[in-house]
Image (cartoon, rainbow, N blue to C red; front, side):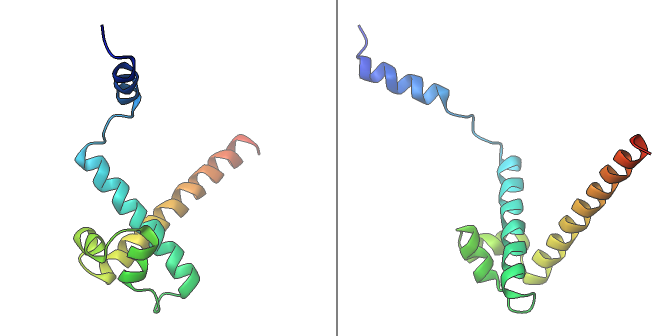
Length: 102
């Protein structure tokens, strides 16, 4: 007969969410860093935002930021690209809603 405590632990392990793939983990981390960059730029301004501040806000090391984006200008470029895509998507959705409700 199984130990009830062991059985409960096994059930908890089985209920956990499956691990994300490496690609999903990478995408999650990149988005986390972009979100942190937006937050830091909003609070500190563009010129006063540093990779160290972005890393601190994201709760990761500065090395993680550099691993994903290499340099500050690349991080800012990708952040701007993300924001433009968000704007375009919101604009397209608003246009679609306006077309449905003339």
